[in-house]
Length: 344
Image (cartoon, rainbow, N blue to C red; front, side, top):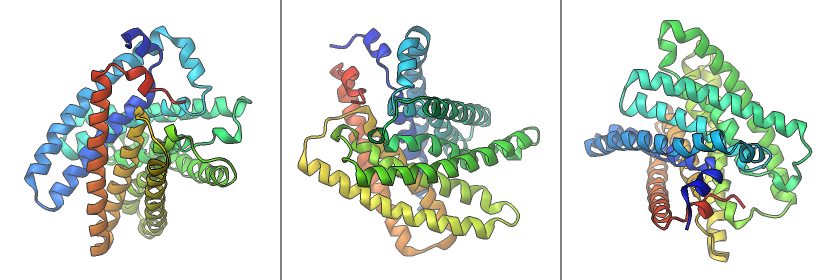
């Protein structure tokens, strides 16, 4: 039976993926409800936005506790090729909350706070992770895994979640700097890491069964790119055509990776028993973020086939979120949290 001290000492930042997954689920639900004039979905999304706000602060308690009382464990986490990357989820979770406060329930002060806090957290944590990676000798080819895309996801998401900030005159200049810096850094980090990941997956052994949910993370930077390209850069003078062109590329690889991730997951579930881990929330956020990006993409093209595909994605998102929340609550009631958050 876990004690709270053990839970804090071994706390995994992957718990913030719960906030990320619930955040995109909430935003996607509101967008679907608005599109089809389903007021009950929009009302449900408003309730979920409040609950997600509560989830964040509940998870923040052990996170701060670990930083304050178990600093040696934190330093060891940053040397771990999986645990280190999940620290970025702290910032991405705040960006996800900022979307809830801009699209679902417009509360401008909360939106501005969470967007700036999330953007700065993503930038600082990702730079720290990459610095430790560059300066160390602890990374080998088998350590390359999709959790490395989390930093790129956060960076690419900064412009897409900050579109209301640029409308505030005294914040506009700083926001634009953060937009361009983050999107450029995130784009090239993603392209570079994607190439390395493909190389590793072809020439090295498959992912461990405990990490299969990580395979879906690649949809995160794809969805974040679509969101930023079509909610901000499309409206920038002279970039509308460029934004649509790159959106076509990201949408194509996103659809391809969705089916690939689906096939790989079904294969793992068929061949072996996959235990529940908090990293299972990696099933939810990337899919939800890709759904939101693809939703924006189709708002320009208006293809009926894509619209039907988006509904399929949404129903799968509902299924994944429901399974995750049930298993997470089960884990909490059984006080089995320490085991569930382990990354090995």
